[in-house]
Length: 128
Image 1: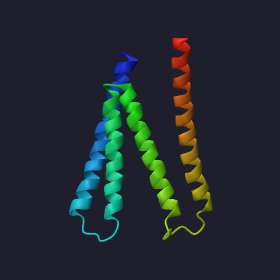
Image 2: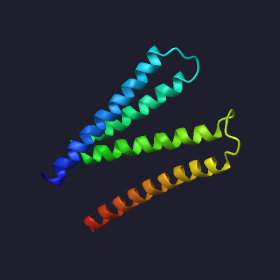
Image 3: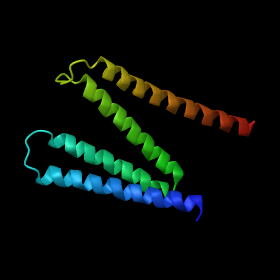
Image 4: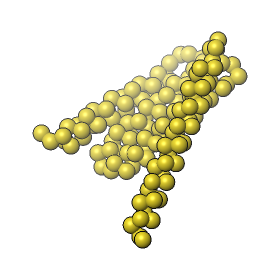
């Protein structure tokens, strides 16, 4: 069996796994009898659904899979920043978490900028 076929099978299995976990999150949010945390469960299910969409998009187009993966990472960085800077933060010493959240956001934006800069450099080299 080729490596490409194995990768596609693995990505399909991961997509099904993440979609199943997202469905369970939505099911718990809809049926569960709890008063607080329902929004967090829905956000978690939406994140898992986006991850599964990136896995399924990988089967057809790696470009779309990279774009969906980038959207997921940006969403995770935003949620992480919100979690550490919210006013009712239950963590006693959140400074290390704040530094980690800021570092993740900055490194992600730098990586995006360097990728776009490299692609722009490749297109200008080809037209010269």
